[in-house]
Length: 398
Length: 85
Image: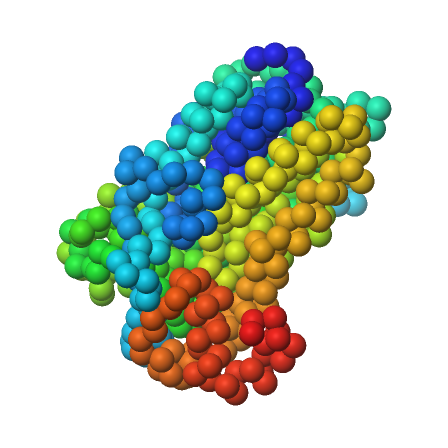
């Protein structure tokens, strides 16, 4: 480990990996630190990603693809299921990844490109000198060192602390944290080609329950419920146990993962002098789906690109780094987050009867473009009254 | 921005000093380490920044106010605010 890098990346998930890789590809020196002893574990993810979204960053590889999806199902609170299929011939629309391998490959690529990588190494405080962030204090196996950097990219995930230590409030409101549990289950009867989402206040209050296939008879079976609906006797695990006992009584659970997913708006500002926040740490998870892999890779890559520009110009002030903040907000991803936030806010307020009615209005959809936006558009066509209820939001959907 | 001490194994009490100068423990946050899944869900909602996920354990720092928000959102029920007189 050198004592000074151009870029110090904290966290070895998809955001951090893309940041480190992009930085070295831009000719910068970069160091990535991961507090866990292994990249990719524990998974803390349902592992779903759209095919096209993934292709922006990496070519698909069977080593880290558990299953390919051709469709999806949404189960209404009353048990009625609507199916979504791709109208494209043989349409593979998404993947369920094997994040243990996927994350590892991304970090491996960063290392091969020239980034230094250290695992079981935790950033425990920022280094502040002359009133500005100059790097981070790192702890590894009892050794404490200081590493200096022109810019620190905090990719430290949902439990991010680095931003907080630097004065950025990253606290997620209780009602906007999805308290989540997931089992990797085997020996269960599933449709191996479709992701299934279960909605309803009895099943998953203000959240949803998912079955994402990982093979012919295996799946990630998980749930996220709003933090405000969680409490003793009615936690995410209680809901999931009730579901799996009833739906997959003979299934075997080979892995149990817990986690938190933020479904709030992104941070008001994702940069400070010499600091950028990316991925879950920036709270850029899609608030409607809870998906964060693409957004993490996108913001990680963009942050490093902007950092490279700013280093070339010798200006790493907040004002200069704001180019990153502005660009992701104006991007398709940024606009999608805002729109999906508003849709989420609408949907969580609807009683089960209303959700039933919306889902019953269409039993099967062949989607030209397989996305939540296209789905919402189709649902609006079938339920024109929703346009009035959605008010100004409807304009951004049409 | 100081370096915080390791509070991984002990619950951290919220302390009130009464008129006689004696400390009265009012409440404290207990981490049931056998239940905790080390996921960091609680860390993200802590308004004081008093929790930290350090690899495979959760640390509770001095500024914990025992507000109980973390205990509410925990997916497994590993956190508990214990009140004492």
